[in-house]
Length: 376
Figure (cartoon, rainbow, N blue to C red):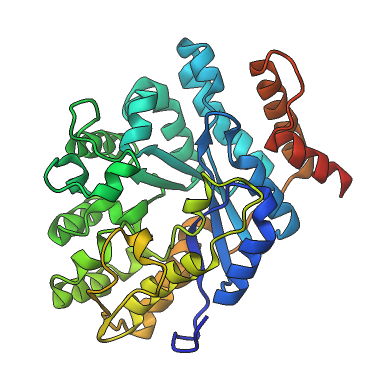
């Protein structure tokens, strides 16, 4: 990446990697940014169970370059809801045995939460939270979305186009989601959680500070919610003071790859968008003055490309945000991949997908990755 940025090791704590076929493009983008490492996150998928096969594939080829945070498998929950607590909790040990470094929970995004209908503080997840706390297994947790997505007058058209208007009475309210998280943290105060997108509190730094003060084991990542960096710019002095005071609790992230989730696996990663995401975050953290988003990134921001301003953080704060905080939560290096356990899990996933298709073999991501892993 541009030499205008500080020569500090950078770990991107939040990159989506949905398709194994796109690995070379992701590696090229990581190299161009000179990323030391990245945390690849997966999400559940209705057709393929989850993106976990792609994460396994990447780590098998670049074991020292990536941490991987897997997604939950809900197939057994849907087949037998009575077994949900056991079916969910048991997956933590399986992920660890394979060599996953953490868990990605996107189930707090309102459209996903509505689809699943399972509260975070309900019995279905109780055993999972207990296992995560006991085993010290970290979580990247997406909870809520920008508050304007619940407001019919303020919700932007681009958000509606994505299905992210939540004000029709059928979605959980933002405060209800926060209340559920509060109950979980009361029961399990030592959970190691990185809340994605600044926990969608960028418009209320006082509340963000109170939350971090109340829950010393959690962090916020700086993965752009579309509104985040303009909110920070409303009072640069307050924002800079917050970043310096809570320097130990903030984690660098970009959400690179999020737009690839709905892509055909053969499509190439959008390089300008990916690099633009990283550039905006780093320019905000390091520069002192106004700046505009790079061309081609405005559509991702869902807003004009103008109106950004840097807060010029000191080097010791940047060191913590760029890599030290993530490494404190996830460990100084990725866990090794257990290829035998990975293959067993891939074969299990492939068999489940085959059964859902009536028993006919399906050329699923799990089967393709299992085949490639067995050949290497």
